[in-house]
Amino acid sequence: MNRDCTYHRPSTLAEAVDYLATKGGETTIIAGGTDVMVDLRAGKLERRNLLDVSRLDELRGIRLEGEKLVVGAAVTLAEIHRSPLLANHAPALQKCARNFASAQIRNKATIGGNVGHCSPCGDTIPPLVIHQAEMVCTGSSGQRRLPITEVATGAYRCQIARDEIITAFVLEPVGADFADFQKIGRRQALAISRMSMAAMLNQDQEGRITMLRLALGACTPTPCRLRLVEEFLLGKKPQPALLMQAGELLAEQMIAITGRRSSIIYKEPAVQGLFRRILSPVACHD
Ligand SMILES: Cc1cc2nc3c(=O)[nH]c(=O)nc-3n(C[C@H](O)[C@H](O)[C@H](O)COP(=O)(O)OP(=O)(O)OC[C@H]3O[C@@H](n4cnc5c(N)ncnc54)[C@H](O)[C@@H]3O)c2cc1C
Image (cartoon, rainbow, N blue to C red; front, side, top):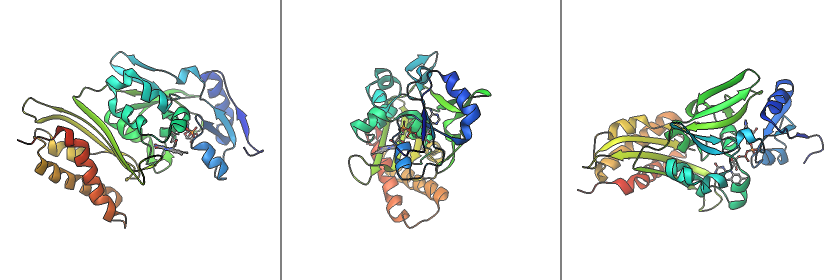
C-alpha cells in the first residue's frame, strides 16, 4: 500500500458515519477491496483515507424481515453463494454469486462493493433489479432508500453521497416458478461480464406468461429493466418463434440505449442468444 494512505476501521456504524461527516470528502470506503486495491495500485485512487466497513455488524447478515429479504452490504459473494435463504428466495442472485470471479475473490468481494463501484458490469445488479431491490444508505442526515435502478447515473457514477455508507439491500423475495442469471465473458472463468441477464417468470397451466421481469447488465451504461420485452411476452406462450421475435425487440431496445457502435456487430446477435438461452427452460413447444 502507498505510504500516503491512511487506514481506519471503525467498530460501529455510528463511528463510521461520524468519521465520514468530517472526512468524507477525502475518504474512500473499502469493504473487500477487490476494486479499491486495484485502483490504488494503478494510482487511480484520488481519496486516500481508507475507511474499512467490512467488519461492521450493522452491515452483515441475510434475513427475512416481514415480506422483504434483507442482505447486508458487507455480505460477501461467498456468503450469498452459501445462503439457503437466498437459494429459496433469490436464486438468480445466488447463481450470479456462483459464477462470480474466483473463490478467493468471492471470499472478500461484497455486494455493497459491487453496487458501490457502479460498474456497468457489476454482476449482482441485474438480479437486484428483478427483485425490485432498494439500496439502504446511512449518512449524517439519517437513512434513505433508493431503487437499485436509480443508484447509477452512468458508468462509474453513482448517487451515493460522500458522507453515506450503503448498509443493506431490501429485496422482494422471489414469487416465481422460474428465476435465473446468465452472463457472457471473454472466457469461461474469472471473466468480467461483457453481457449479463437476470430473469424471473411465472406461467399459467397452459404455459402463458403471467409475470416476467428481465434485466440486462454490462452492455448498457447502467443496468436496465427490459420492460418493452416484458410487455410483449405477457399473456403469451413462449414458443421458439415468439422468443426469436422478442429477442429482436430486446436487441432494438439495447441499441436504442447504446447507439450503433462498432461492437454492435457482436452484441446484437449475442444479446439475442443470451435471451433465448435464459428462457429456454420455459419455452413451450406445442
Ligand atoms: C480478479 C477479479 C475478478 C472479478 N470478477 C468479477 C465478476 O465476475 N463479477 C463482478 O461483478 N465483479 C468482478 N470483479 C470486481 C469486484 O470483485 C466486485 O465489484 C466486488 O463486488 C467489489 O466488492 P468489494 O467489497 O471488494 O468492494 P471494494 O473494492 O471494497 O469497493 C468497491 C467500491 O464500492 C465502494 N463501497 C464498498 N462498500 C461500500 C459501502 N458499504 N458503502 C458505500 N460504498 C461502498 C468503495 O468505496 C468502492 O468505490 C472482479 C475483480 C477482480 C480483481
